Length: 90
Image (cartoon, rainbow, N blue to C red; front, side):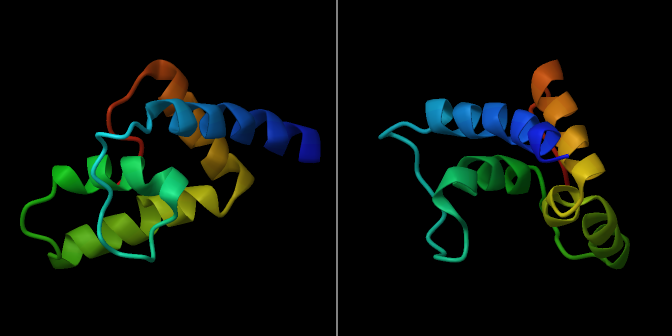
């Protein structure tokens, strides 16, 4: 199980390290991990009137934290990375 987890997370770390550049503007909050700041800024860029009640429910069920908390969720994120999706989760 740990080999599968490392196989899924290693390309994700590599992608986040390669995508970060000196010109990247990270969010000013200190709660966001540096390696995830790029994905956080991309994911929140498309939202305009957050939070609506149904949007809160969607983010809780299908959001980044929920995806990363389970092995199947991490697999979902990795599939979307490999497919080339711009938005990885809600």
